[in-house]
Image (cartoon, rainbow, N blue to C red):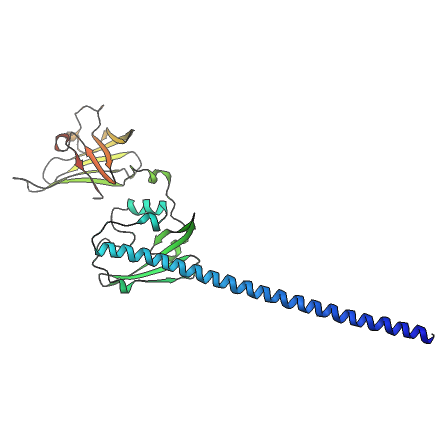
Length: 285
């Protein structure tokens, strides 16, 4: 091998080493930049998640602060539309035996200093704590971004039940849906007890139960069918469920009671109650 050949080989080898070093350096720089970008994204995502959690916690706390304040002030301005999903609003309004939001039937004035909202182990679900009648109440609120803002889509006292949105079946979204309606007449004159009329769904799904209760007086219990006539709900006699002597002898082609709404309140007229005068029905028993 001649000197010129050896020189050319050394020059080519030197250029090869320089090229490899530059390539390795480029790869190291690229890798470093990739790691840096990943770390920046992770930090950004973490900050975004923390910001989202804080916003949702503030949202839930704002709702409960507003609601408990309204209770303290005997105000009925619930502002549900701002905070709750449509189905949750309907579900809350359908409950007759208590207040879902405070998980109680009774309450006293709330000390807002006891109100706390914190994150849980589950995404978008927050723990709400406050004191009612000297006992701590714990609720769990699920928050979801709907359209252009946050909404609470579930409220429950059980963390395991909080993951699913409250979505009502179609029949419960009907404005005439009810579980039980009642009307009570206080005792008068020689009467020793009052009279209670009740309209409720039959547990066996056969229709509507319409009954009259008086401790020492007349009693009836009828299974009925319902018909929707425009904005009214007409209840017709179908079958007697009470004693034989209480069988209905009136015109069965006419409704026993007609129910309609004024605002959010149920009203009714019935030939069996106050001679057909308009009455206001109460939800529940």
